[in-house]
Image 1: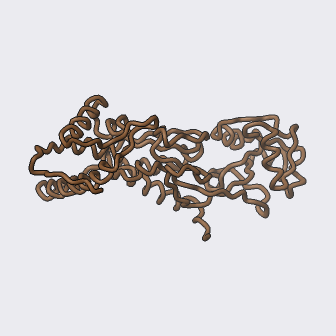
Image 2 (image 1 turned 180 degrees about the horizontal axis):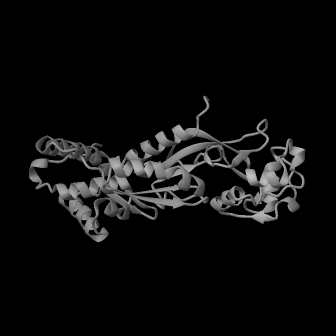
Image 3 (image 1 turned 60 degrees about the horizontal axis):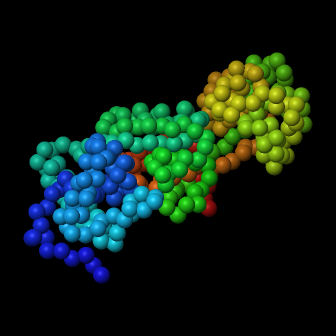
Length: 307
């Protein structure tokens, strides 16, 4: 059954319609309030007032947040079209470009956050100064369904059907050591030469031993006397010649004084995915940031291999 209404009988308030549209695109009142720069209670009153004005329920309040009703799903396309028309009228009258503004939170690993995302943010600040960019640098998996972030850069594909994902590149990594370390301890010529060298462990020594055993890399507990959970600290320990570390090749190639060991072996390969909640992905500012991240990562990392 399709949504039908006699629009002539309604005094339409565009502010309320915009509140509904942004809430539908953002998926929650809190995210929509941040996007519009208003208090959440004020936004909630505008959405409720539109429901009262139209005499329909636009959202269902669930434990996971807000979900559009069938009427809301049908109405949101009409309101989006109205918003686009209003924008075109405004642009034609003012001759100005449409501004993209609001908060966007990106979550990525510590290495990606420190060495890949700053260039993205620098470009966005020039082209879309109205954006507020937040970077959540963590190696843990952030819950996008709960809106802990808007966009995630991950090395595994998401299984949640509520998320949209795109495999955009392939990253590679291997063992690196500083020139100072190699001058002091010698350069390994084969995997068997790793014996007697010091390595920086990630997580626990046992986990790293087990993970690298899959690549026929023989490490022992005694070789992993140094441990750093933070990947930036891990890389800095290797860069300063304390021990051999593991790092992505894009970072190793660009770091003066770092040497990739055993060039005939490896590398360890892992995919790079961009992930967002399906509803959030429909936001113009999220799409803009997504596109900029994708372009920068494709330029810095290996192209995605053909399936």
